[in-house]
Length: 510
Image (cartoon, rainbow, N blue to C red):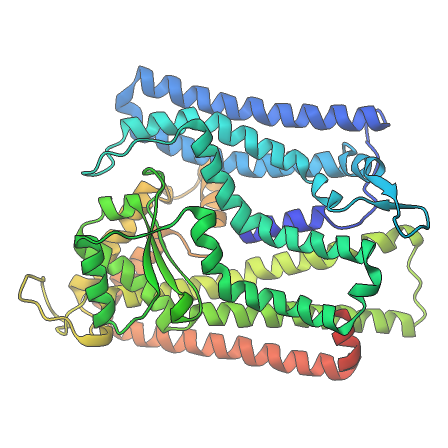
């Protein structure tokens, strides 16, 4: 859940008057309670690690049960750790302590000022919890790796330091990069306030996001350790399929994970800076036809313009929220509403919470529709021109640009989804979900799949197209209507808000 985690960490870095410790009081209480919370998280992680190690060593036949349980426990601890970190800031006084300890003399004079990038110390308990968890979980991950069949190519596992660094690189790219940009802006506003008031700075701030989105693929290669896929059967097959689909990209990249993940992704808006990335495990574990379907899925995102759609949707949404905040401020000022002094510093948090909820609900729904649309394209990429075919062989002719859709192609991609779900422990719990445990497991699975939907639901939709081919056309029309309704609606709302608040005032805020 990288996007929602970004919002949580951004909220922690807001300049708000965090409360003193609710228990004990004073700096020693804040540090002591925070250390106790971090220690509790470490103990929970160690308990999970110990259970996995003892269970697999004592009863190797329970491997599937233990691995599934381990995946569920880690998902639960993700929310437990976020709750503990929030408690450190809001209840145990850690945020209050940081704002007291990080004050320095203002270089420009005028008293004390918050130290550069000191905001990042507020979520420090969560960073400590993450680092400890990565270090502790290594033993469980390595043993699971050793007891799991990982395909025809044996792969050594990471060293402990390599595993922690692997996790850190992903976290730094997907989560910390936008948070650091936000804290950089706050630091400049404190130490170079005159600079932040210039038009050049405002234009540069607005340009950072599109430039970052455009050139993110160039950052991903060194940050994630991606390598150009070596020449061989895999690359030759993928290049041939890309040519048949009339798809262009800069390169096919290999993501060395030592068998830790089976995944593929596409990054980049333009062909010259667009890459398709495959992890080592998905290349080894999936048969050729299913791997073709996976590439078709990633190509489907590009063919349907999903990356451009996401960029436009998120940019418009954040601009509309800024305009709405300006409008509310103007209306409150005109009405003579005076907020209590203590509440003014906290006004920065509600917009972050509202935007996070909006992203989770609206963008999550849009993303799931687009993911399903890419699934259909993945089926088309490995489909022949016969809608009633019963199987493919070496003589099968596949149409250009994925213009066919047949039962065999649908079943091929459905198998690929199921295989990836099993490898990555993304399966939805079976049964009617009547017990509390099943409800919790289902809820956590739904949260994890908020952008993609769960694997069983994706598979069931695709298989339904075999019995009802017309459903695919209805679905495509509904997605087209959704995307245009959202974009046109956001543009219309932005225009109305811009006229109401004044475009100059809106640009000043942006």
